Image (cartoon, rainbow, N blue to C red):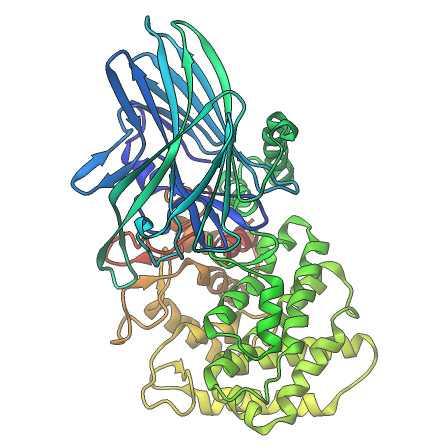
Length: 605
């Protein structure tokens, strides 16, 4: 896990590293390791992708001197805490500051029980010869993620007591905010921080700046005499809570115990894998459909969209990414019950959707991908759990949904990813039937047909590639080819597979991930995705056989990527890299990428 010490590390390492923490339900913190909220997706407290507290600043008054401890750009003015930060420990979420001999330690954790309370503990030490006033200033806003609205157009209602404040917006529903402290005294004093700048580089590698106004509803404050020390706590929640029932000691103890529990099965020399595992725990929103933090949608809402055929392709892609992350998220850590529960939810969604009634080809394709990737994830679960009966009906019925409808079948047989996944699903189904001492000639015949189509219709010998779609006008190497080699049951097992892997290595591979399009294609945009690396390594290990020698060769292919862990995310890896060396920073932490890196690590060890 990342650690910073003044005088040892470069301060810029704090700004480049993304710090993520969630309560595991529906709320998360997403800042830089210096608690910087300059990026458009940053926020201290996010619920359902609407930031309510963008950040928390500290203000320190020593005689006539006032120090503002925070990271933000306001118009042409830059408020910075760089010179005051002395150390950062992201394993324990501890941040230390020294302001003219007034020292304080800031520790952050979520109550991961039934509440959504965020706890910030301040350990204050006044080593000056003067009285010091210490203030905590919450910066409030309300916006849809990546769609900023000026908060001065929104009016907050505030109800306050001695040590707490309750805020809501008169123009919104169910967007409440509760702020409270044990020793910090609340004082309402509404002010605005105008023209706050948010800058990021998008997927097109273009620099963009958004601006908004932030509301400061008041302050929480405490006085410290010279040489006096105090420990105080500041609480934030979107639900009303009783401060006397919040046990901050248990909250921090639980966080530490959870970190130990999730890493104790991993050998000590695999430091990166321990970091990856902790980040998966820190950033997974357990009851939300989310492939990247902080975006989320509740499972019930998602199911309702499936039932009413109102699902979008974006949400389907998010859900498919979650399904594909099942191994690194659950199975590698023995969380079989959690994996089953998640897959049953997905199964219910898929079964509630009427593929025949869908007249949107894009939606239909994404639904098919979700269904077939779910079968692949179910097979990974079966290989660990050895229970083939629980999802058998779903696997059989899904395959026959495709076989019995000519339009759907044609769609699947026309696309290389879909046809590879269908072949894989059929082999999974046949393997279960074989163990039951049963047969299904219909699926066996289709299996033979698929192999013939891939070998003779998709394969282009002179280019040594597979077509993406049979009816495309142009054909070039694309990442979807890799699934013919990397699924549980690869459709290519002959010399074509060897030639194809060679093309993938020459045209798609980089040490930090794979391109989605050939470097020789006009479609190539210079972006690289680590999430495909586990598939690439699996294909290589299949070709060479799994030995210590082949694992070492494979490790050398991904060494630079694994060494990059924790440089940009606390214990994680970036979702997208750029061949141009530009940091693509408008995309948040990605669960699929992190889980695939965990899967990759296990292949190599």
